[in-house]
Length: 276
Length: 315
Image (cartoon, rainbow over all chains, first blue to last red; front, top):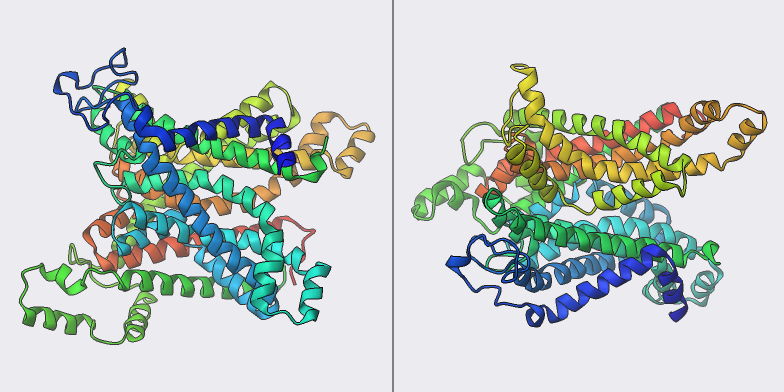
C-alpha cells in the first residue's frame, strides 16, 4: 500500500491530484470552521460587492460571502458524488462479477440487458429516477448510483472474466464452494484494482452530474450552497457580478480535475509495466 | 460482414428497445403522482377521478397497461399530452429533428477540432503541443455543460454581444439566423466531446505509430508525411468511429441541459418541461425516442466499423 502511494506520488498527475483532493477533503471536513463568515448572513449594503478585503471572492445578490458559501457548500457536493459513485460501483461490480462467474447464456443475457440499459443516456436515466423518487439530494445520489451501475458492471465483468480462468477460482469450484462464496471471496477482491481506477475517474462525472441535477432544480435544494445550485442562482446576475458565477464553476471544475488526475495517476502507478 | 451478423445486430436493437421500454414504463408508472390527479387537479371529485382512471385504463394490471402502451407506441401513437392535450408522438419527433441538427453540428465541429489536435499531440509526443493538448482535454472534461453554457453565454452573448443568448430559428426559414442561434449550443456541446475524442485519437495514433507496419513503411524509406497519411492515420482513425458513437449517448444527455439553457425546443427541453409538469405520456415518449436514437446510432457505428475494417470478420 505504501509502495503504491510512493509510485502514485511519483507520477505528476497522481501528485497533483492527491494534493488537490487533500485540500478538498479538508474543506469538506472543516468547511464551516474555515469559512470567514456565516454563509447565510445577508448583508444588503454589501450586495454584489466585488472581491476585496471584506469578501475575498466577492458577495452575491444577497450580500452573502461567496467564499464562505463555497467552503460550506463543498459538504453538500463532494460527499454526495462520492457516495453515488461508491454505491454504483458496489452494485455494478457485484453484477459484473456474478455475470462473469455464471458465464455462458446467463452472462450473455445479463450483458445484453446491461447494454440495453446503457442505451438510456446517464443524465436521462438519473432525471427519470429523480422525477419518480422526488427531488432532493439523497434521491439524486441514488439516481446517479443506479445510472452508473451498468457501466461499472461492464468494466468489472471484463476484468472478472480473466480472473474466472485463474487456477485459484477453478480450485474453489472443484472444492465445491458455494457460488456466492466464490463471487464475493475469491473473485471480487481480485478485480478491485481496475475497478478502483474506473471508480476514481467516475467520481468526477458524479460531481458534474450531481451539480447538473441541482442546477436543474432536482438535486440539492436551497438554502444549501451546493455548487450547481450556486451557479443556477448566479445566472440572473451575470451582468452585475460575474464572480458569483465563476467561483462555483471553478470549484466544480477543480474537483472534477482532481479526481481525473488521481485516476490517471493510479492507472500509471498500478500498471506493472511502468515500474521504474 | 455476414447476413447473420446483421440480423443479430437488428435483433439486438429490438431487444434494446424492449428493455428500454420496460425500464421507462416501469420507472414512470410508479411515479408517486397519480396521473388522474395530475390531469384534473387536487380538487377533483372522487367520481371524476374514477371516471378518468377508467378512461385511461389505470385500473388494469400493470402489464396490461404496458402492453397497451407498447402496442400504441409501435404505431407512433404515444397518447395525448397531459399538459397541452395534443398528440405526443409528432411533437416529440419534430423536437428530435431539432435536437439532431444540434447533435450533428456538434459532432462535425468536434471532429474538425479533435482529430487534428489528437494527431498532432501524438506526433509531437512529450513536446509542448502534446502537453497543451492534454491540458485542454483535462480542462474540457472538467466543466459540466451547464457551466460551459453559462460561461460561453456570459462571454459571447452578454459581454461581447456577438451571438444571441437564447432561442431557436429554423434553418429552413433563415439560414444565417439558425447558424447564429445554434453557435453557442453547438460550441457548448462540443467541448467535452473534443476533450474526450482528442485524447482517444492521440492514444490510437500513438499505438499505430509504434506498430510493425509503420516501422516497415519507414524502413522502406517512405517520407514521414506519406507514412503518417497513408499508413498510420487510416488505421488510427478507425476506432474513433466507435468512440464517437459511444459519445452520442453522452451528447444526448448533455443536450437536455443545453437545450434547457439556450431555450431550444428540442427533445431534451420537451423532456424537462414534461418532467416538471409530470406529463407522463410526454416523459415516456421522449425517453423512449431518445434512447432508441442512441441504440440505432451505436448499431450504425458498428456496421460502419465492420464495413470500413476489412480485417474484421463477424460470424
